[in-house]
Length: 434
Image (cartoon, rainbow, N blue to C red; front, side, top):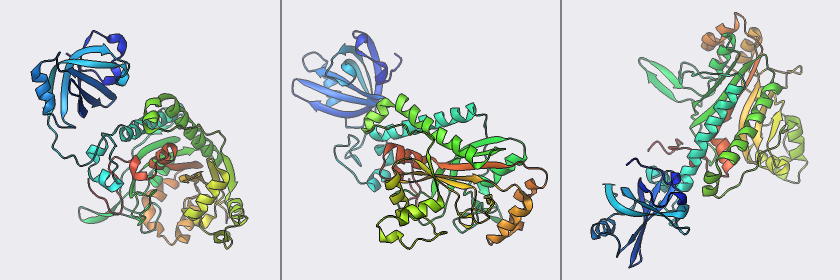
């Protein structure tokens, strides 16, 4: 008999036979009756064994099954409003497919709490918990939503190299690797290749892919391997791509709220779709807003200073919704960022959630001489970027783009305490396994 997921069965199917497969979530022996709770990807099913009505062989099998063993159950569906899903299974056959050792490395019912490090050490078991599984079902749905959004807006999906010969944005936050007989690096960003695609005439491109940053940040919001959602678009300015970004965020929230009711219930959260357009404040206005508070930490801020995590938190508290910080100092942004008429200001933006930065983008320089001068001004060697600069010599349109952190989007939308909860197997300063 073909197996069914627990969610594919409902009380109206009473009297029919069904086969379920899954894990032994819990066993309760009440003397005259035993309940076995089977768990699969979609939920739970109660397998009911009245001792006077089932074969002794089945009771013997259940008696010796360890929690989290994998089983196959075939039986008759019976309506029972007290059971998960409103039905129970009266078994004719129970077969153990794989026995689980005891004791378990952690409790997948969640009744016994475990620290995040303990959970990550036994991630295979942690992922069995319905509330953890819900995060990754939502993550999968978010990715589908993003792909559909870009398709609707005329973008072409691309796949750029993750082994590169030079730093994308300069600096030392690079993971070097041995590439045959020479040094190479794991890619920090698809930025250079996205811009080359503008020269190639692709017009609008997007990519969802890993990025690698060798930054020594050991915080709840930093990873050394993350997933970046990137776009680049020709003949668009930075206002154009900001509108695309805010519309994408609103679409994701709307779709998750509508389509992921069960998963949100498993996480015990409600989400609200943010209103668009998002509020925009300039970098200068952000500095003034911080200095207007009573917090002495911000009184010494001057134009050109970086905005620390505490600055972001304070701005988030004051604004209380998604917002953009625009027109950053040119020297605070990468060399490819287009300066405004006042060259000290750049045509750039960061998308902020009240908790943290989510995305960064800008209008890009498409004038070759200006680009070379900016690379040089950043203390970098233009010769190292020859493959990239060559694309600017033979006709490249004005263009803009951004990069959005998928894990940060999930973390803020779902109210997660630690960004590692949004990654199957996170990589940070201390964790390289599993």
